[in-house]
Length: 119
Ligand code: 5GP
Ligand code: ZN
Image 1: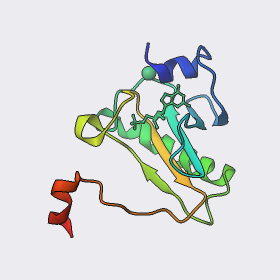
Image 2: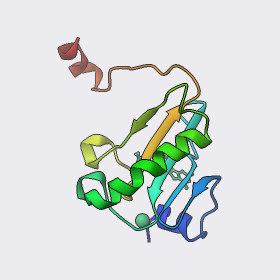
Image 3: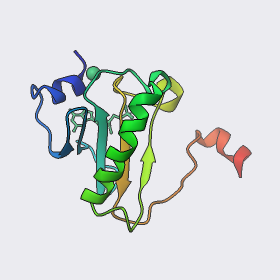
Image 4: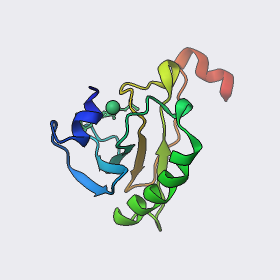
């Protein structure tokens, strides 16, 4: 069972923000911004690429509700999904990162040796 499935069933503790029957939001253990929360379906789905549109249709309003709960809806936030190897996905259970609480930077994300191509 993957670590996020263990968070869903309570085997691994988490600092929960919001939950309903199908989705859960909890604080990232290693935050990259003042507010950094992970939003997941309770059902194990490996990644964004394999996510059925019906799940996304229900996940969208849940994510918006999480943004409101965190008071990020007015100030703004960033949503990130890392998909697969090049995307840097480490946990193979679909999750959206919602980041905010400050004006976020938009750094070069490609390795330094490639970054100048995109200037
Ligand atoms: P990924 O790189 O797969 O997009 O992101 C995985 C995220 O899960 C990382 O930001 C990491 O800090 C977070 N994470 C990994 N293990 C745990 C855990 O046990 N609890 C919580 N709350 N977050 C975790
Ligand atoms: Zn899982």
